[in-house]
Length: 400
Ligand code: HEM
Image 1 (cartoon, rainbow, N blue to C red):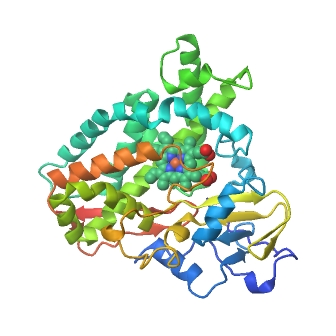
Image 2: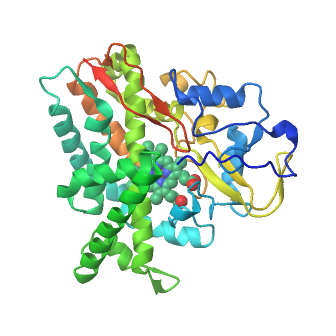
């Protein structure tokens, strides 16, 4: 959401750390947004900078700083760290909670997002991938993002939550409006519709509980107190916003890379055992989520004086592509062995949906490579990428 407001730089920020850097309008033209972001942040700028754009915030982008910062929840709080304008800010537990409350709510999600519970989703994910890919039979191209990358995660999410699959089109529309449109008017129009659906769902599950996530949350307690309907709605809103558009972006980035790298498609088709590693390397190279934190008390962090109330953008995209950490980071290289990245963040808030995301990405890629010939970008088409806290590819025209 663009709040291109430029503020006065606070007195405690030394002038040499001030750089006008608008994460929403960083170069989004080809070759790619991560490349541009990392190049700008890591080529010549101080390791930690302060931008007056978007209300004013620090940007931390080096892997060692990032991993240290996100673990220090006493100083770097997740509460009130949102980039949303105050009128649209809504609670998203456990993501916007600090210890000790954070872990109490996070544990509730493990009732249905633990890897052992997700393995039962694998046949469903496979069936859906097959159906979507079969739907392309007889064609020689598609707009991958809208035809596949949005449909798959929303469908899987509805299945995991046991929500109304017949309303898939509406959910897809809400995902686009609320999460990826960067358009306040669309967020304002669609958020109440999602909330109204959730209200109905909560009422229905209260009246007739099952073993679905909403019923499990309604039956849960924190400190001996049952969760209120409002709390359950907030958690469900987080799951919806965190669990759909992210996978869409990961799929689209991965396929936009493969469309430019036929040798990699052929290698993975010949060696499917390398697909899991390729998913990790593509997640690293195209790390697209950046997170915010709020400084809870004055701190000298890596030699930089930050004051209580300052906001910090933690660039996971830049950290995963930090040349001090990974050799030749712009290169997708399957021979790195275990590739460490922070696409899912690390520390207490590390993505709890990562096992589901990995399941979707691995199964999709394996099925695609098995069933489809080599793909390439449509002639003259250059994928346009968007910046912001969560980066994405706007559309992806591929041909085969
Ligand atoms: C490729 C796909 C995904 C990426 C790159 C991703 C990335 C992230 C990141 C970076 C965070 C940390 C946020 C922070 O530190 O403030 C996070 C948290 C979270 N993610 Fe994901 N995510 C993905 C998929 C999913 C899915 C599929 C779900 C669930 C269905 C999910 C649910 C969550 C939740 C609930 C949190 C909050 C965890 C906490 O605060 O303890 N994510 N995700």
